[in-house]
Image (cartoon, rainbow, N blue to C red; front, side):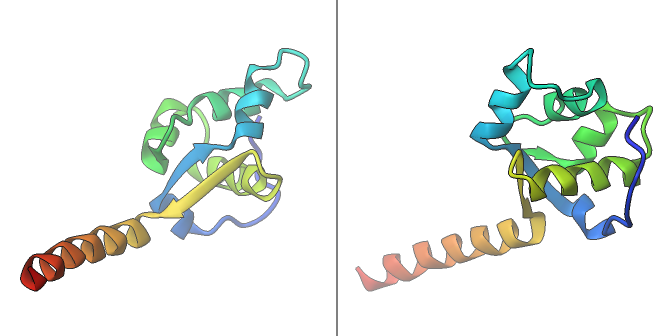
Amino acid sequence: MLAATGTASMLGMERIYHLTGTGRQALECPHSGLPQAIRQLLGAIGFATHFDEIAASLARYDKRDILARLEDLEAIGLVESIAVEWLAALLELGSYAGETSAVAR
């Protein structure tokens, strides 16, 4: 069960998650000792997966519990995340940089 041990930030729901190399190894190792619920959570994370996609694939669990577990897994290095807002800003910067270089030509 993915019971929450702390209060998860709802801002974490606007993040993109992916497994680290260690997270991938832990998921693939049959002797890692991970509880089944954590294996399911790690298995729901693809290369770059939005929180909503992860939560949809684990619909039987509360979103706050999923988020709390993701935060725990990130703290121990099995998962990494990035804010959607930051990615949008980065894309905007990339668009701007392309316009600037075109003007410089």
